[in-house]
Image 1: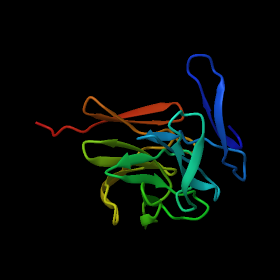
Image 2 (image 1 turned 90 degrees about the horizontal axis):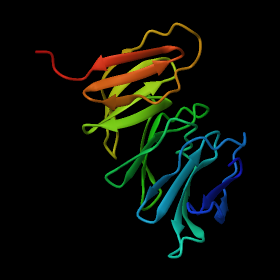
Image 3 (image 1 turned 120 degrees about the vertical axis):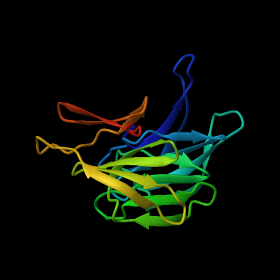
Length: 188
């Protein structure tokens, strides 16, 4: 929703609760993340991210914390080992941001990684930035490290915004009308 996080009953679609989550551009693109009775939501352009705790009857929520640094526009957020991994909005050049789920405190930022769409597989983050750079990143709460990187060939000026996908030993990256598949298995 443009200005709120909402919860609806799966059975009949009735509204269970709403919570304000305003953005400068009325855009809430990043999918909410649910874990252990809590919902994390985030949006770009300095809108930040917030962790909401569900009431026992699931009919209301209360905010546990708010963090302005993890203001993910669209690239997704991954929860690993009690930490949220996602990129900050391009406007503030924070790069990959790591936030402690329980406290809401930022534990690290990495501007070198930039604004990325991410996925997780085999203990690593697979990141795609808006210039077509694909990075294999070791997720660490105290500071993520780029292990390797390469560029996909961009045939148009459209930004690569699709999330990378890892499936069946391959990395899939989509840009415009092209789909690239890269083997992740050792040659042999």
